Each structure stands twice: as structure tokens, then as C-alpha cells.
Length: 470
Image 1 (tube, helix red, strand yellow):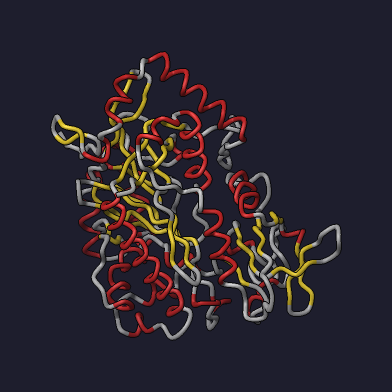
Image 2 (tube, one colour; image 1 turned 30 degrees about the vertical axis):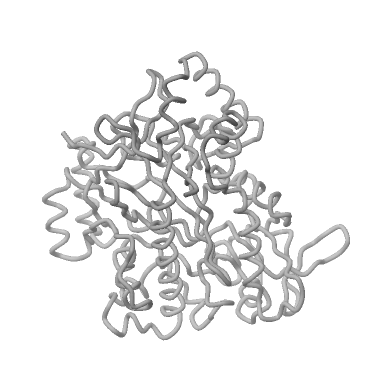
């Protein structure tokens, strides 16, 4: 039987970061716990934090389950993670500037050309463009897992529009409301500066032609999008306008927003829609969500788009395997955080190994997300394994495989009491004039016993993430 690292307990003793939670946990009777859980759900619903999944029936206003038991990191643990995350964000941005420019890393033979230039996320429309401050990916969500006291691995990078930061902020808000004593007893670093840092980051990459205080907007696909709550939440906290494509138009060298007082020039667009829909004149001609002519203004330095079109080539799951090489190539440093060992099914030797060990591995589509298009070998039925075998054989380059990691567990409130459940972590790294991240992130928890799939779209929940001040 696999043994998992429990982040709270080491043998029979409580690990230092959790020392002050032991009494709180044991002193809370089941009735109070259920009452607090109901209170948290009522708060989430009243605030309007809901999560819809495209293409599924059921409740469009469904809540992501919230677990009241916080996940805790010491200041020293976080310091290492922070250094590793910032290092990775720097390397990913250097890679993007390079592959849309001279392609030195490809010329040097450090990454195969086909993985970059034939990648469906590689946008030829932005070749030759160096965005302001050389930043393509302004919000980098790095998904991390832990397997031991000092063992952290990067599971994947999200360089386009990583979601979930509203849960990081609201989880904290609700925990502070419900358990003020816990916050008095523990010195927990705050995360509430995130909207302010995000606004500063976006303003710091204003375009060349901006000669005044930049006007920043958030571009949303609209209220049917599963993350619409987050778009409006961030716009509100940053004090910027939330706009849809129809609210913007291009005239001459600039983008304007329609307002009741007439057109207002826009300098920075934090877009929360995919590349394909940004500009129907450049990408998908049938897009009703974008702004016709936006890419012409972007190319000419009249507007900044965050994250930049084309950033997705850096978070492809096959390209991910080369991030440690990027760190060495661009920064001349050794990676602080390791990748999960990964087999690329597009390589003959790797394919042979994967097909022979399918029932032991986790297999993912290189462009997949949200826990979809994925096989967890040890938990899969024989039929599911054979279905994936056929899919991989038909299109090997579309898949990668990784070992089934012994993900760490944290105590979690479940129906029968308190039990260990598997977790991951998504911190949000902001890249502009500076690289910054707030101390914490979104901890996702697999609420089903034994499950390793933490995605909210697959039934996972969320927790508050504490970083203790040293």
C-alpha cells in the first residue's frame, strides 16, 4: 500500500506549521463543525461564488465545495517555493520572447522545432512582436504537488488565463469571518493585496504609445463563462471596467471603450478569453466575443494584451518537459523546483514504455485541462485502459504520461469527521516591471477518499492556504 506524506503529522507528533491547529481541531464538536460548514456555504452562495461547467446539465450556480481545514506552510517552506516559482516565470517569458523572435533555443537543439512551430498554440500572428517589458505571460499559475517534507514538483504551468484566484481571496475572507480567533493566534501572511498588485502589474506593461496614467480593463467572454464571477470580482476589487468585445472598438491606432460620456481610450486589456476569439479579423472569423482590428493596434504598440496572444505555447504539456532546460538555457541556473518525470508519447522509446505500463501511469492530452482527457491508470477499469491505448496509438504526439505521484494529504472535514485527503497548490505569479506573488495560493483538495483528481470540474474542493510569518 502506498504511503502518503501527511502535512500535519510526522509519526504521532504534529508538524510545527500545524501546531496551533491541533487544539482547534480536537475541540470542535461535530455539531459546530456542521453548523460552520453550512455557514460557509451560505456565505459563498450569498456572495455569488459559483462555478458552472460548459456542456453539463444540472445547477449552473453550483458551489465549489469549501473545506474549512486550512493548509499551512512555514515561512521557510514558502520562501523556497517563491524562489522556484519566480525563476520558472522568468524562464517561461524568456522562452516566449525567443520563440516569437530568433528561436535561439531551437537553433541550439535544446527543444525540438516541431514542438514549438507546429504547436496549435503557437500564433504566427505575433511573430516578431516583443511586448512591453518583454512579458508575454503576465499571470502565471504554477500547479504544484508535494510528496514529502522537502519534495515539491511542478505538475503543469498555466501561462494564458489561469483561473481560481477569486477562491484564494474568498476562502481567506470567509475563514477570517468564521474563525477570527485562529487568525489572532497564528501569524498568517495576508493575501488581500493581490488585486492591487495585479493592477500595478498590468499598468506597468502599458504600451509604447501610452503617455498618461493607463486605462486598464478586463475583457470577459460574458456571463455564460464558467469563470465570469471571477472576472467581475477582480474588476470590482481593482476598480477597473469589466467589458465584453462589443463594448470596445478600434479607431485609427487605438482601442476605445464605449461609455455614457463618450469613447474612452483603453491602454491595457486583461483578457479572459482564448486567443482564437480575440479578433475575428486575425483569428476565428466567426468570433462574436472579440474586437475587430485589435491585433493591428497591438502590433503597432497602441494597446497591451495580457496575457499576450501566443503565450499558450509555453504551457503545452509536451513543452513543459523542457522547462528545466529553459531555466538552464536562458538564466544559466539550475531549476529550484523539479518537474514531474514525464514520458512523451511522440518519442518511440517513451511510447513503448507507456503502452507497457498504462495501468501504472497518469496519461494526459498535451492540450487538455480541467482534469478532462486524462487516464489515472491505477484507478482505471480495464476498458478505460484499452480505450486510452487505442487513442495513444492513433495519435502518440497528443499524449504525455507521468508516474502516479504519492500526493501529500492534509486533514479535511468529511461526513464521517476528519480524514486525510490529497491536495495540490496553484500560486499566482504576477509578471510585469517586477515579478511578485502573494504568500499563498489556491489549494485544491480531492474530496473523494483515495482520489488524486483535485479539479473542481471533477468534484474537487478548495481550502484556505496559510503561509506563516517567521
